[in-house]
Amino acid sequence: MMKEELLQKTTTHFEVRFNAPPQAIFLSPGRINIIGEHVDYNDGFVLPAAIDKYICFAITSLETDECVLVAEDLDEEYSFSLTDELIPVKPMWANFILGGLHQLKQKGLKLKGFQLVFSSTIPIGAGLSSSAALECGLIYAMNNLFSLELSKQTIALMGQQTSHSFVGVKCGIMDQFACVFGKKDSALKLDCTSLDYSYFDADLGSYSLLLLDSHVKHEHLTSGYNVRREEVETGLNIIKVQYPEVSSFRSCTLSQVNSLRKELGENLFKRCSFVVKEIQRVNEAAYSIQNKDYKTLGKLMLETHDGLSRDYEVSCEELDFLVNKASAVPGVLGARMMGGGFGGCSINLVRKKSIDPLIENLSAAYFEKFKIDLSAYQIQISDGIHQVK
Ligand code: GLA
Image: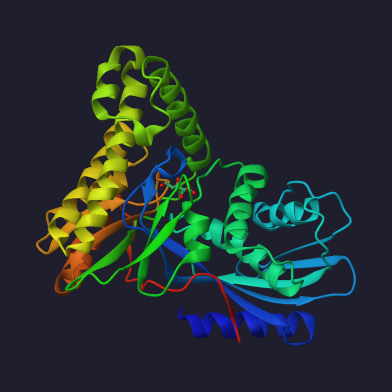
């Protein structure tokens, strides 16, 4: 479904449900990440971008404290009053919204009730961050509707906080940042420690980025993700005892990690090596893109996958299969699982001419092996959250 269709559909649904056109419409995008996985919460750098898959918010403010949320795609509604104590509730999707409202209330900001219909073209559980799009979209809409004067950075950080406190995933800042700060045809290089960022041209010449959706829903993401966070935190503390000059993974070298293999134990050793190597790879990848050296970029992506699969252990059989098969197809320079892992999409760096043969080749092989239909998304890099006039 295209953007126009999504806008039309959401607006119409709003009009039918609330008997009037919405006061405002917002689009909040999903994201890709070129490279830099599981390093946003490890003081690394990441290279994400917003894409042309969105959650559309149609919204009207009220004079009362009543809030009506309509999840059009799920055909579900949830109503409450702003004066209620806002705590996590049963319909999971509502928490992505309640978490933001809770924080706004805590900040003492003046809100009113509202009627909201939202609908999405970001596939759920595909690792394209529909969560961040929902969290940040809501806060952005409130900011706009009630003139709260929150900065873009604050919106991103509050979105992340929603995941932490109302969803239960101790995520980093990458997804929310990309959703808010995304820019058409540009990827971001984000320093996850300082939150400094720069844009760079994401034009990859005769190559493009193709997503292949394994359709394995990342159900273990929450637990698996939080466990990884604890593991690397423990690992870093062990490293710091031996090397007090190390303040974060960014200032840690691979030889330091190697020297502590015994102290760390095999599991933490693998996790920590991955992080240190991945932080290094992002710098190399940024340099390769600048120099239009796509071969090196592809090689780095493959190394990332290998690390995510063997050392960080957040891949799955289906994703390994897709990456493996893709990398053997002529015209494919790189492939790797993308996002938190345990399912979702792979991201592939493919010569434009080879996209169709790749999809054909892999769809057949994937179905034969797993009896799952593969989906391919040819995404465009797009603007971050914005109001549609
Ligand atoms: C999820 C999290 C991000 C990031 C990625 C892995 O998408 O929300 O913060 O950690 O996983 O890179």
